Image (cartoon, rainbow, N blue to C red; front, side):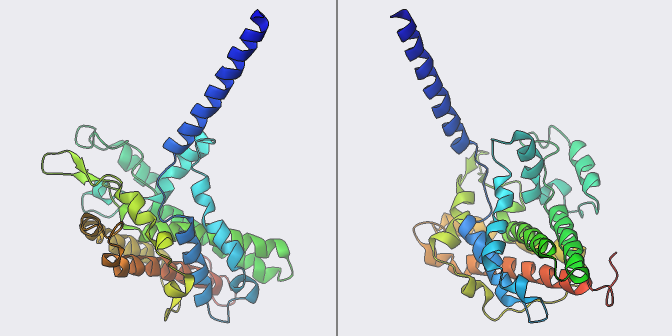
Length: 301
């Protein structure tokens, strides 16, 4: 009997441990920029915008591009704490931490900047975690550039083609994050009220879920849009992030009017503009990577 009771206790303890792990998995799940449906719609819209001089294998890979566009969020799982710690900052940048000055050109200079922030002034910020989104976008673009170069060199290689699709999908994710205003601010899920207490908690999830909840389609995001070749990728990334940041207060205003929840018509044009901007940036960088991967027309710098 004692052995049976002990086994029951062990079984109960194991069930409790599993249940606790599941609760933690849900509780610790990081905030995303757009639910998976939104990210997929952005990637498919970008593919629909591409002209015929981009290879058909890539333009028709909408299912794969869509699936790969949500994968970077999977890397933030509590199941993989080391990967999560590295990946989490890749999805945002807190522009307020630069106090109106441009963020550094190099990733590691940005990390040094975060490490030297005034701990008292930014006591609510995890020092060293101010975000690395612009670097994730630029580095993602460069991976795709090299992948497309391999496609040109080895046009029959299925591996080269799949690699290009993989990297393009990942890049689409970060472009989508860039267009979500709350991924450019310290106040990503609530802001200080007049009394100093945080208000509008939960705004991040409400805005994230809007495209999927309200049926945004790739066709809506691609309509009347064509990709352009980007002259300078870093400059374009800076422009897109600055534009997104200019919409932070607008996001809070619409949320206060229930535009992301019970009165969605109030926010439709705003969220549509943001997701269309994400699709356009994605298509622009994909197209630019393809054009510049031609060794006869451009040199990789």
